[in-house]
Length: 571
Image (cartoon, rainbow, N blue to C red; front, side, top):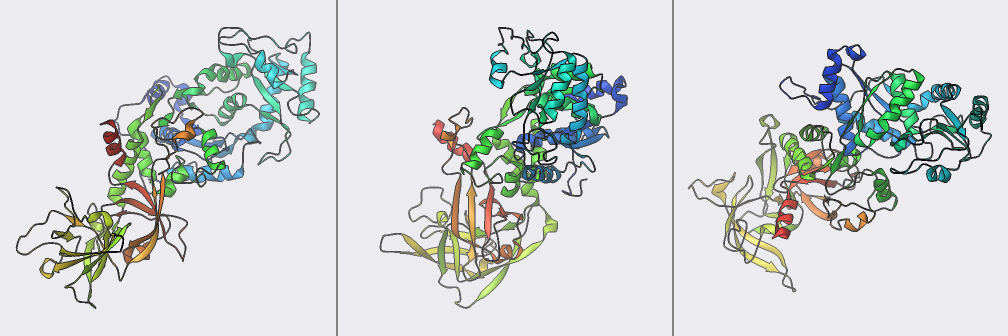
């Protein structure tokens, strides 16, 4: 049980089949590899906010450590000072904690190992396995070759052009800040004819005269990811380095560095990344959405970021259940976002208290109800949880209902309010529409009804049945709120390519300013509160809420409305 979230994490019962990663670990343990230790890590780069794909990786790494009674590190791979910010570091820490992954005192930073990495680089130079190269970045790209053609060796590669001692001096001068940005790099000496392009003398260090968010101006050379990644794992004693599939072609380089250094050798294992329909998961594109203000920040509830989902009202348990449902595989695929939304509905249905709220109000006047009378009716807080108890809901002569719950000329099977029809008001009475009031333009502005006093509580003592039940709010007691209706950010299932912005959904956010809610919700409305508006969907209180304004976000509808839309379009 995690105290921060009060949810059980990674229930790895013996009856569950092992995923392929756990099978590898079982096989390793069977032969005593790593002394049967399991030590995993989540190594984010602090250059953006985490998204749902990172959640899969976090929960896989942490869950694996929990399953085998091992250890889990949160380690920042902070090797690029140009793109990294402390804001990202703090957001990542918050997200990992919120998901329930406990890293205790194992919050680590790659920058803590800069000196050790530098010393390892000296070792490779001394072995003749690394050299300082004066080619520009463009020249290195042009001499790298292709999948069908070998690369061209750098003129600075061989000892006859630049001795080990000269390479050492040049590298030390790089560290001392004697050269401008981009003028020199340190490259590994491997094989420019390798069929794996990552093995063609990859860059280990580049010169960047830029302050680092932790080390300041102490360093002006910074390690490349492929050089730093394996060393960070090795220094921390990681046993199983779980990476997404795009790093599979990098594994030979990961292994080569550690083997050449004779360092502790972690085992890299790749798994499929999470691709989710109707969104983008590229950090570059998410950053563009933020910087060009297509969304209102990294935590915009339309974003696939963990902070955005948290603000929207998703629960950490729902995300965990979702990642368990999709499992772990070796082949990339796209998961339907409807499965994530189902997981959210499933959990919120169990825990969310119920309230009544009117988003598009239409006034109803109950003519035969006493003018000054008010009463308080008993309502169930959560039918899925008896312990949630009940609350009192005020009722009076004038109420609000949803405008869509009334039709002047309804079609067949319209089981809501219409002229001459009778419906049940949730927890209250049967009412019958008797009259309609319109404005000069013919718009309905209010309707008049009569009620049956004998049907208090929503049932008729004479056994009379009605087919429709609608929700309502007492006009006299109603509180006002702003409700933000969030929907999918893109209209295309796979908004791929550089023109992905063409698929932005113009209906992804609708703001309703004059919504009416029952007073019990207003009294309990603290930011983060998740609840269900009966018949409408699941919602939460937004952090923009203050003493002067209550702001509510729609988390998810009660049903998958997109499935209906897609069905109509298909027909």
